[in-house]
Image (cartoon, rainbow, N blue to C red):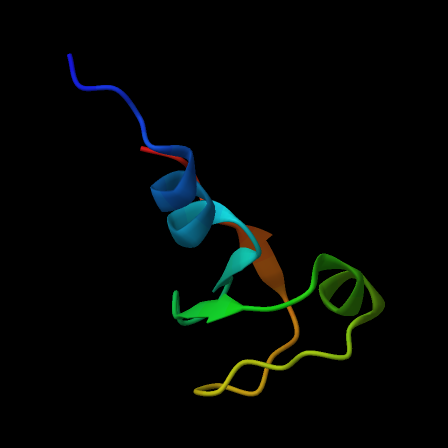
Length: 54
């Protein structure tokens, strides 16, 4: 099994959030997501979930 590269893991999963309505990806600061300051580019909703590691 291949070893996981920490730089690649950070790039793919750190600060990446998925819109709950339209499933588009966004990179943003977690504190801004929690405060509701970030909106989705497509649907303008502010409900996000964390990206799941595969």
